[in-house]
Length: 267
Image (cartoon, rainbow, N blue to C red):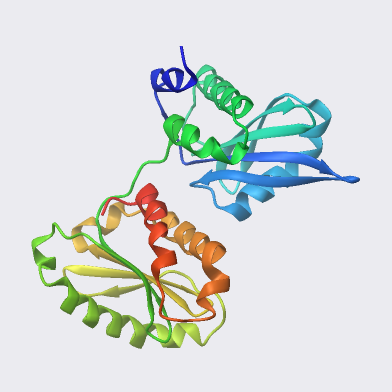
């Protein structure tokens, strides 16, 4: 039976987040490389691995459990040649995860890595085995510069109220910029802010002259996962920060960011 068929037989595990990291030795020190992350964020994932790196290297293979930032963290790690492959799972502390299920998924992931020439290809396997619950209720996501330059837009075209969305979006961006210029001038980072449009609600996050706006139905705002908004903000900056500083009107490189949006939101 092929590895792909084996993966199809393992039902996916729904978690808050997961990450796959490789620890390798370079000269006299151990370095880390993140191959896949969803629902955690690179900075938190790096923090978790750094906290446990020494134990992983000394034990070579095993399981670690911890509590980080109000999340339960499960860490499985395996050694292959001179590399350590670490699987980090994040979930709510009140949720009990079946250890046998988690162990099976880790073993399948490690089996995938062992068969791949490039560990970076593990992402496809990981997405079959671990998923994060998607958040509903978002009608549109806008990523724009404080100057008004639009980098990315995704709109729910099935909503009847968005039949003429081009005109509406123009008005939304104008309102966002008016509100956000005050925020942009107060430092590189801001907290998530809100604008009420009656039956519509805007959540706005801004960082380093970038504005992230989420349009939500008023009756859906209580179910929106705001942590996802923060993760999207950080991931966009990590991927494209060197490009957004030099605006040239070409937004084609940002199209692929839709994959990240689709991991977290149903639009």
